[in-house]
Length: 169
Image (cartoon, rainbow, N blue to C red; front, side):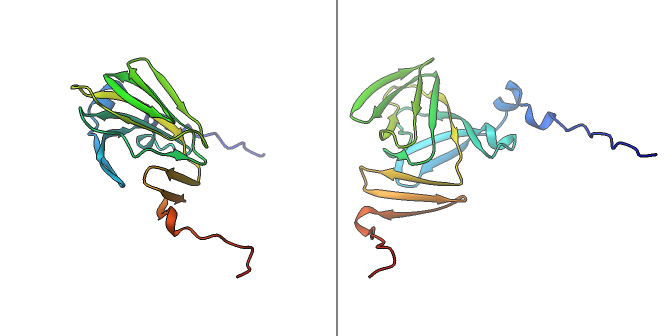
């Protein structure tokens, strides 16, 4: 007689974060690798529960701080959803004032973007996006490209880029 193996129940508790869990998770302070004024205090929700294809982060930006260096991604879509406070968004050639309830999408190959907290209070938002195994981030203001290949990051300044000519010298 053949027996059918019983399906084991997967532990789902590791994938559930309560508000209390999140509130009691210490923030990680991230200073941008190319901009010491860009300081984010982050709880990486997706990392806590083991998600690898998408990133979702609860971010707090203190008054006067920036969020990043003006940039865009070649492969990664990003978004933010404002929870509290205010941020000034520079998106392409436009400027926007963001506050609680506002949502912004940053598609791959889109316009460069960055934010700054010009208010006198903290701002918080959810930041998310996909995590492609290979991505290129362009920083037009500082003329730099960063390559993220399977979680290894390297950069090159535009002036040092060389063209590959199909194997010919």
